Structure formats: structure tokens, C-alpha cells
Length: 275
Image 1 (cartoon, one colour):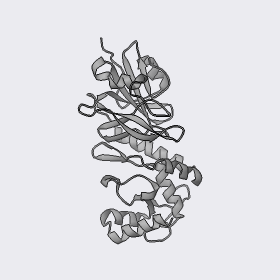
Image 2: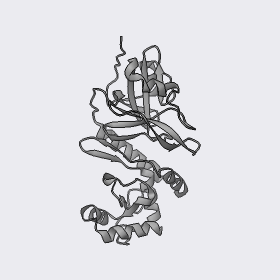
Image 3: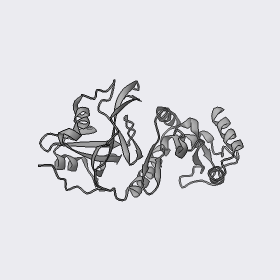
Image 4: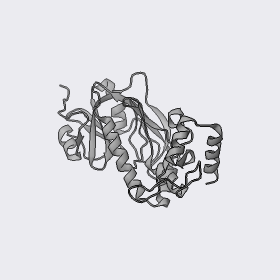
């Protein structure tokens, strides 16, 4: 008899509640319950070593193994890879905040999209081969995901404002080479890296990098108010890295998204190169 959960899609649960409900381990991103024939997947966003990312309604989920090349035959990598044939039920949670997990529902490997390998940095900072599993929601439709995403971005922006510029530079450099994550809500939602945005604002030192004028006002914390802008837009394939991100006043930011004139783009590229 297949496992049935009482958890509600779109609801936040604690780690203890997950363990009690599914009978799985309290640790790790891939947790199997042999008694219930369930595999619980956790996709985290708290400076996670794994580069999970959404592409529309498909989550490209990174396999198990913190350092060194991953093996698809290892532990729960094999469980997930064979899940379509073994009948094991796979459930997905996203963690936007420490000790808080949003239940997305039951998922399955995407038909016609086989697991594949790509390069990512491990926990030790060394590049290695990892296995990526394209998965999608099986039947459920996620509720209120836009509200949850907005909450996460607000929280992330607050946290990075407290970081030193050296820490921002270190974390931003770790983002180089990572693919942009986007997901379908009512329209495509592009997940912007708060570390990269904050570093771009700090490096601007209170001046718009297009019009060269001082920030028009201070925010609620007394910081110069500027907005992060991607020179090559994320929606057009631009990377979410410091080398593609500048800080603009609201007026120039709006101008770039309406006009995006070649002369202005060239000026911003030059500013980044000389920064």
C-alpha cells in the first residue's frame, strides 16, 4: 500500500514534524524511509553548497555528496534515479529559512529528461562533477508560492545588509558560473542573488553608475538608496554575477528597462570593467 501524507501543500513545517510524518532521518537533503517507502527531498536556499535551480516548473535537483565527484549509484542518488520503477514515493520541501520547510508536494522524475552531470564546487571549494535530477510536481499545484518567495527575498536582503564587504565579495565570487534559477508563478519569477545585488550597491559608493549622481534618498536604515540592475537581463540569459550587475538610481533603472540604449549599456560595461 502506497504512503499517503497529511501534509498540506504550501504549508511550512518544522524538521521534527517532517521526521514524525515520513519516518525519515532528521538530517541531509535526501532522506529515505524504508518503512514507508518514501524519499524526502530538501532543496535549501541558505548559502547552500548545492546549486539546485528551477527552470519554469522543473526543479534541477543536485544529487548527494558534498565533496568529490558524485556517483549516481551511491545511496539516495540511486534511490531517486530508480524511483520511477521501484514505486517509492518522492516528496519535496524547500527551505528558505533555517528550521522552516515549505511542503511542495509529491514529485517525480521528468519524463524524457534523464539525470545528467554538470560541474559545481563542493563544500571544500573544489570543482567536481555532480548529478542533476530534473523533477516536477506530480499532481499538486503549489499555493501562495509568490507570497513565500517575496518573504524569502525580504529576509535575504535584510541578512546581506549586515554582511561586511569582504564577505559579500567572497560569496559573490562563489556565484560565478552558476545558472540563473527561474520558476513559473503567474509569469516567470527570476531568483536574484541578494549577495550580488548588495555588493553592487556597496561598490557604487552611493552614486548611480549611469548618471553619476548621488542616490536620491536614504532607505529606512540610513543607507543610500540604489537599485541593482543586470546589464544583460536575466530574462535574456544574463548571469546573476557581480560582473553583470550595477547599482542605479530608480530613474536610470527604469530608463534601462524601457530604453536599454546601446550607449548606456556600453557605459555600464565600462564601469564594471574599471570597478
